[in-house]
Length: 366
Image (cartoon, rainbow, N blue to C red; front, side, top):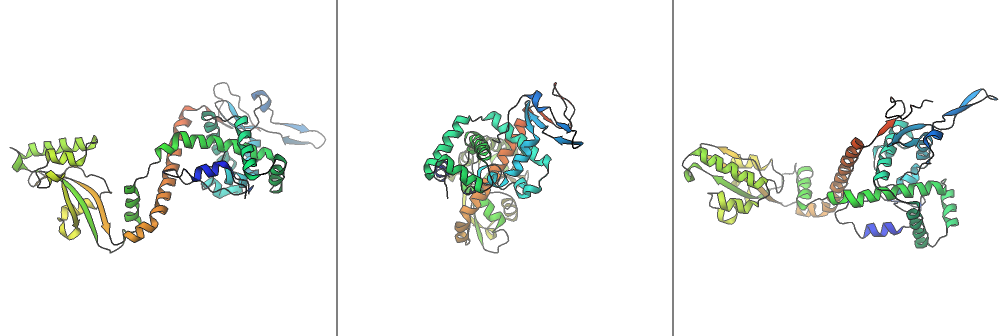
């Protein structure tokens, strides 16, 4: 197995980053470093084909499938994508696990073009020089004690050219820059997130008894001249909670419950110890979440916070915790990538084959 320096860095920095796709050899050569397409002038790219009179047939040389900020994506890029699917699965951090990867060679050209549009957007925002790619390849060779000729032979034995490898190294580098500089800082999964997922998806149908750690803020008409004043005070307390004030501090200032001095902490309660109304509302909350303003003018108003859950399934939770954490990180990672691409697509100048001519870009047809 030929392993990259990037792999070792990722293994030592896995905290709160989404799990990285596994990479194989060449398929043994491992590296995560933009799809590299020939950068000819637009004029030369608009030549779509020519007629071979001897054969009385038309041969498609190349064509512009799309452009991003007037940088073209060619039909030959689509073919190169199909040719290097296996290598891309190993090297591209944003490809493995996608629906496009699952369809593989059966994917439609239009799907591949959309993927390459995203790739072009990323490369324009996070460019990587050929020199940087060369440096990384040299590092891979050094780590695996091989020279350039042996690397090329390894690639060739698997059906890939060095140019294929270089292009995917560059593509991987631009995407990893996006991940490191923008996405990773937004993928934050808390212990509460993991527990919520466990209780909602794995323990929800269990009959195992649970106890709930509950905090409460109550405001009754007994503490105010009128019930309407109690409601107004409750709404003020709720606004302070939404602004980020700690529940404990707000409870001490507003609550007339006996638990106010303890920050509204009611301790651990089983479902049998709760009133039907509180039990119903608690079941709607996630760990760490606060309810809205509950109650009425007659009985008073209250706000709940679900601070914790305990169950005899704690052993099962401990075993599944890491798996759930990785699932949530991966899902949030994909969500943040999607949001980033949606924003950048709105700002980019994108033109596709068959669309009307825009901003002076000629419309090309086969």
